[in-house]
Image (cartoon, rainbow, N blue to C red):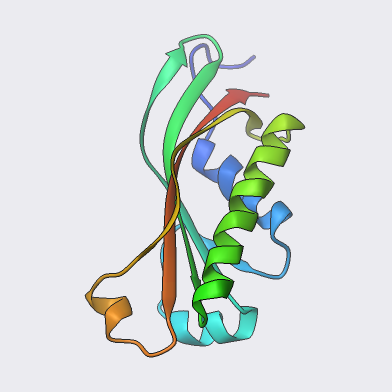
Length: 141
C-alpha cells in the first residue's frame, strides 16, 4: 500500500528524463569534480537540480522549480545543448514519460536558456554555460 501524500522524487524523474532525451551526454545534479575531463569526453555536460517548488495538489501533483545548466567548449554548442534539454523535457512531459518513481505531468518555462558566467567559468578558456529555469510537475506512479 502506498503512503498517502508522499510525492515522488521529482529530481530523480527529471534527471532520468534528461538522460533519456540526451543520450551520450553526462547529466548530473552537481558539477563533477572531473568536470573538465567529463566535458571534453562527452562534448557537453548537463547539470539539473530542484531549487524549489510546491505540492500543487496534496493527492497527486508536485511542481518543482528546476535549474538546468549546460556546459560546452563552444558557445554555440552550450546553447544547442540547452535548447535540446528544453525540447527533450517538453517532449517527454507531453508523452507523460515516467520511471519507477512517477511521471512528468506538466512543463512550464520560467526563464529560457541564456548564457551566464561566474568566476569559475570566466577563468576557463573555451568554457561556456547556459542556464534555464523550469517549473516541472510530477505525479506518483
